Length: 103
Image (cartoon, rainbow, N blue to C red; front, top):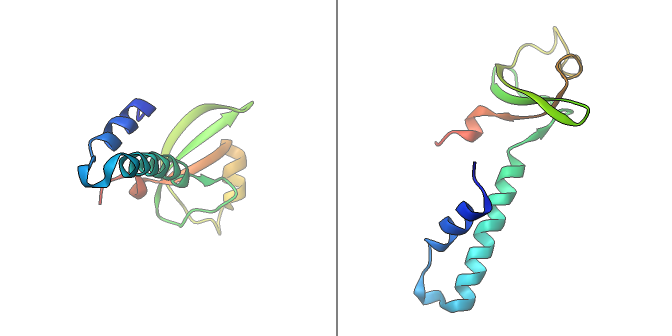
C-alpha cells in the first residue's frame, strides 16, 4: 500500500538543489497533493456507467463497509442496465484496470 511515508520518500528523492529550500518544499507538497488527487481520481462513483467491454475493479459495500472487491469485464448494459448491476452486487465505486497499469 502507498502510505504517507512512501509518498514523502518519493517526493524527497526528486530534490533539485537549484530550487532552494522554498522551491523544494513547494515541489514536495505539490507531489504529495498530486498523488492524493490521483488516488481519488481513479475511482468512479457507482452512478457512472463504465464503457462496455472494459475491465473494471469494483468494491461492494454493505452497511458502509467494503465487503468484497472484484475484477470483471463490463457487459452489454442494454441487456441488464448498469443500475441493476450496481444494486444486485452492492457496487459502491469502480475504476478501469487500464488506469491502474503502467502504459
